[in-house]
Image (cartoon, rainbow, N blue to C red; front, side, top):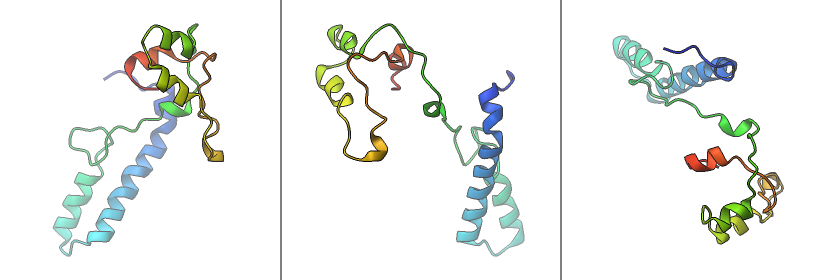
Length: 121
């Protein structure tokens, strides 16, 4: 197994807490009455996130890090039929909700072409 990246190590305590708290919550909500069943479920539910038998999938934190920009604008991507004009227009429209105002992608701004090629924006 390759060594964990610095960002993965940064989030290890958070992921561990998510696994432990979700297991504890489920056991608290459903309250198995027998000790052996409770122990078994606790062991199953507390497997590390992303493990094949885990209750939780690998977390995704990519959105909180800055993107590496490309020398291609949103308009360029629309002109090349990589994105539709309607999508570029929608992504460039500022939301009414104050919390969403930072999620505007201007036509002239550079974006992460690598992430767009992967399908994640």
